Image 1 (cartoon, one colour):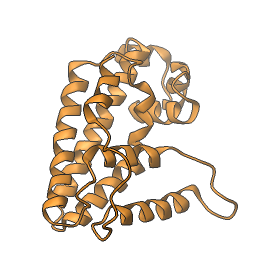
Image 2 (cartoon, rainbow, N blue to C red):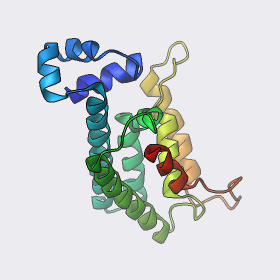
Image 3 (cartoon, rainbow, N blue to C red):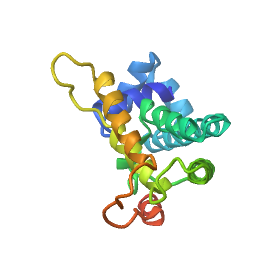
Length: 190
């Protein structure tokens, strides 16, 4: 049911009715409401599921022998399942203890992955975990592809360009201050 919710809310928006989720999942409304009493509860579980996927992608990245390939794999996996699409929910739903715990675990692993890439000297020293999270968010959004190209083809190409920009080879400093993770987290706590 969570995959059905992910599909419905990402294609129709978060205002989509839960009846669309039930229909896409091939279940009745009673089945949906026995599992999730409210739409908010369904959205909260969608957030937990997403954070668990982020944590799994980070673990897989950390298991990779090459720190750069591990980080790049993490970013690609998070973009592929659309991690960033949940950003509009920040401040719109109540944060549960389960959401908070899943987020802390995912954040810890992402920080570890970023630190590992920094220690290996393969990630720009001025790139933060929050930069990477926001990059994933940008690439998680869908846009119509130009004629003759698939959305996945264009996204993969642009993501490869962005990943190259994260590498250490550039000495030019990034513009502006790094994004503040605490401010972003505060959006969810509102």
